[in-house]
Length: 416
Picture (tube, rainbow, N blue to C red):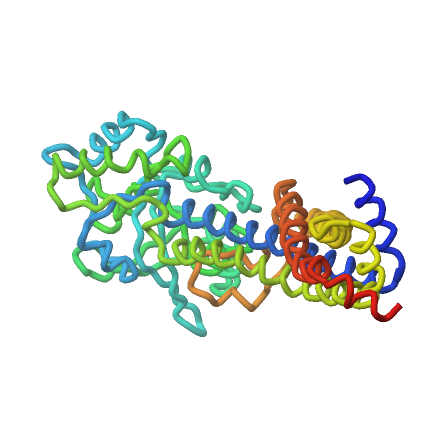
């Protein structure tokens, strides 16, 4: 075995340029795989986090009718308690269920601000400021002022939204909206904070105000349009969901709907399908790179026809000839995959801090994605690219190796 490996390594560098091109093709494919895997992983993880924070929670509770009309921001179908218990009592009982660590109420409704030039439409959220800071990344995005406090008529807005209405932190803004009784109403708020975010939803559309203020102005009692449940682990939320569903059905029949975060968004489901598809794309990329290796190995076999015949005549078995050429292809795979994974990992690590700005490419998309995507640098991505490169390239080297092993020694020696 050691003898065959030594011969294979020596044969690799008979034609240095051809070997270099083959190794370069493998390395380039592995670089693309490692970087693409980091980029896609970063995009998917970012999207999961954003949807959990600003849409689904780990588990989302809402009225069955509201689920079908979320985009309308209807206030006709709210979560207002369970059985003969108030919403506050319902929240306390939900916290007693296994795995539930936080219950976050939200009241969502449409609002608008009139300027001299236009009527600026926006989405208003009545929130518990302290819980939002604890659960989301708003504290990092809040670059000026503070979060809203209970009992006050105050709001925080995104930088772009403030620019559109020509307001600044410390000034006041009058907003108009429809109440739960479909009556038109206006109210004036102090602007106490400014959000600067790469997420268009936060920067351009959202207005946060205290949930008790929102309920008072909308003529809602102890009600919310949705409750977000936060578990001790998002991946275990599916295990805690049945207990939440049983609690709701036992007390309120089928009025309320509870959804795990993966069910709450078709975009998340699309990302999960895409994650599996990308694995096939990685294999396809390596197969393309392996064509160069196959071509190199076929040329090597053709050039060494006489040598192969001589080895067979001297007693080298077919399986040994097969191993010899597989070792040669495998050595190129190891070298190319090693340098490719290192280069791909270096590129991913560098861009993981800087990010890639997609700018206008996604800012107008109706999905929760930031305009800057940060690739995830993980050692397992390097191992994945390195391992896949070796496996696929070595397997493809079997084709020319099998041809060499099955040569007829008599035919191979004729040209001598």
